[in-house]
Length: 192
Length: 192
DNA sequence: ACCTTTACATACAATCTGTATGTATGTTAT
DNA sequence: ATAACATACATACAGATTGTATGTAAAGGT
Image 1 (cartoon, each protein chain N blue to C red):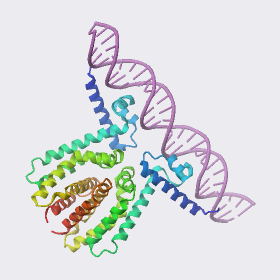
Image 2 (cartoon, helix red, strand yellow):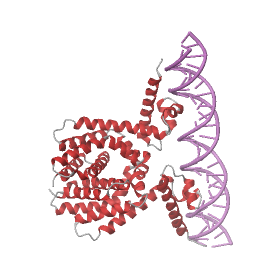
Image 3 (spheres, protein in one colour):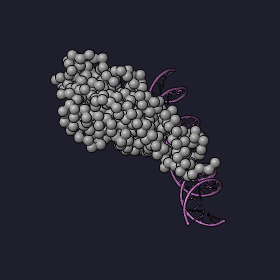
Image 4 (cartoon, rainbow over the protein chains, first blue to last red):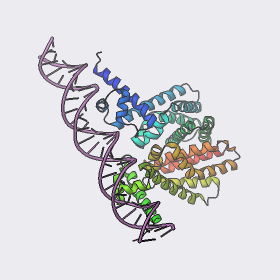
């Protein structure tokens, strides 16, 4: 079968990312070897090192893929919300749903920051999921007549709280409790 | 010089932990090799693998040491606080001070969860620093006449927020802003 | 003093990563 | 259409790292 180079590249990258994703989730970054990955993808290490600079770059591609999916699901869930408060709460629930996809917490919350560094990971987070949270909080503070000088701080702190909640829920915590606690935090900063 | 076996063990373990700590902070877990560590400690790999099961176990010992120090500093800072609210805020500031020690955020917040796993790391956190936060929140909710059914959730969420604040401060964020934001979160959940 | 156990050093085997090199397939220009 | 080139991928290799196995010296018990 004859395929163009761009088609070959696209398919090969997708195959390697899919195989790597599965193995990184199952065994973690350190315990996943490049021979493992290429065997799962049915190719050789030559293909991997042709399309990715190194193992870390492939991991970064996997993480970016997941972050984009999470972001899209949050946007879809909160786009039609009536109020700023409701948009944040809808987005929170969508975030929990999205992070409940097996392996995502490991990729995005545990291994990502360690392998890629906190600053690189923060940039990914800010570019994707934190952007909508910041917007929601901005409107919430505006509605409540509060100064927006702590907007950045609140955004970061709440994003971290969401992350922890997702991990706790995965570990068996009661999702309802965490949703109520987050609602309480949101309401606490929006009223004086 | 003649030393007892227990003395030898204690000194060797301390020397290995100190050397490993320095290197893990400087280069990270993956890029620190066991030859590096034993060379810095002035011994051979035989000593390392005699006292620790593997490289990960040595890392765990380093992390546990740091977590204990952080916990002690929080306890010392909040022991004499007048109110529950003040105890939490004093503890928060002590936490930021303690996490400002170079390398601690990397060890405790970034590499620890990834290398040791989130559950193992959570147990360390809960055993040490989160215990005092939970106690403070419990009193705070009691004083405010609020039900303690979300105590666990609030403890986890706020602990995560503290962690994020420590990372943000280290990355150049304004510490005052984060302390004010945290105070706002605390006050938000303590009043109705 | 002898024997056992513990502490540590040295030697070894099995991977794993990244690179260098070789080959086949696709692309472009004449 | 085919020569010339670029891209995609496979194979081969060198260096480094981990954990273990084995050997030696020091300590502890009887």
